[in-house]
Length: 182
Length: 320
Image 1: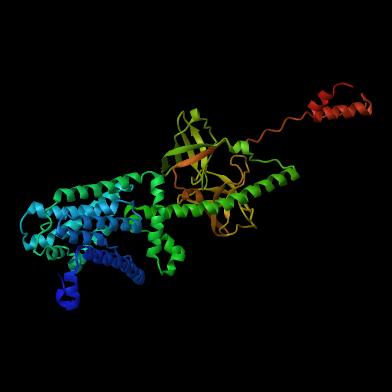
Image 2: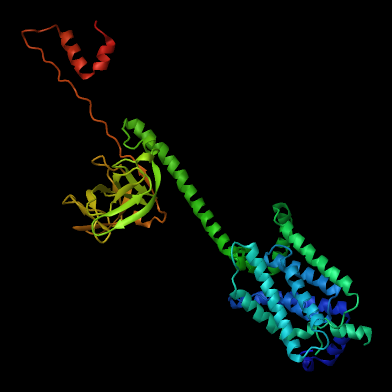
């Protein structure tokens, strides 16, 4: 987990003992809080900051576990929340998040075995980029012309940075391992 | 580093099915929203999301907050479209006020006209004869400033028809073909338009120049235009109707110039109107003055004069 050296021991122990649902809830709360705070930060600084699609970060993080019903359901709910906030037609963001999630989850099956570190590091960012591309396709299809690329490029860079920083918060794999005792 | 999807390989068919169902449901929902009824059903959810977003934020009450576009709106260009719609709505609201004022003024105008028993030189029937034609070519050569319109004799266009667009008078038709007509623009040096200042009432003749700026000639020596006032056609000469906007006056006494407003129009269309027709006065037969040799009774002389002035009335009355 990134930055685990800076986390107080009781908190780290509590995190280690947290199950799948608890970690999903923490991830969900983090995304919602971060999104709202980011929006406020944009207001304070008065600049047009790119709006982070933190759901993509969650999709990339939770996909490490592989296909699972609860993360999928959480991503669907999160997607609807994003649809409501961004005024997108309902269903766009669930599809975007689920596509990212499924692509990354299936990539483990396709590649097979233990991934080399470089692939393991790059894959989430590629997955996030794929999610952004899916979003661009939907935005372009549902609008009169092609959607703007630059804002989405900024969104991708921002999400990739967020993934690097908060990857650990979306780690469900260790919870599963702890629960199964393997 | 562990690979993606390595941990949960069991029960995969079930999970794949769940994934497919989630995506299919989302897609179905997305498609279902093409129906306005279903799309509108989500409005309360969006309102709630907006409330959550603006919770504790005083900005929500301001107009600025209402206009802040969402990410989706920015991506799809919807924000620009909505801004444009808002702008046009404001414009329509503004114009509606002018429309109401125009209707009221029109009513008063006709009332005053009836009171004064004035003859209107631009009746509504005449204005309704206008035709909208498309400009297919513009000739701004060294010889003439003309426009070529895509309507000619077959469409009822005639020589001397007046051309104007939404910003003002454009010119006059100088030649007509079967399917085309040529308009001499008011910017041409050979064009002569009798004009007057809207506020000053000063009369002059407007003609074009090479720099597309109008010149004014035949001004009264002791009078001048008001800087910036609109220049309207005066209707003198009977070629151009009275009251069409030609431009705005600038410069100073002795060198008044006119900036043509018709250049501000963006569409490639003009309207053509037949020139106002002023009927010739009916020829009046000179009254016969009876000589002393064939003097008639007083009543007979009066009848002769009456017949000369108003033959119709006289014949209707019949011989007495």
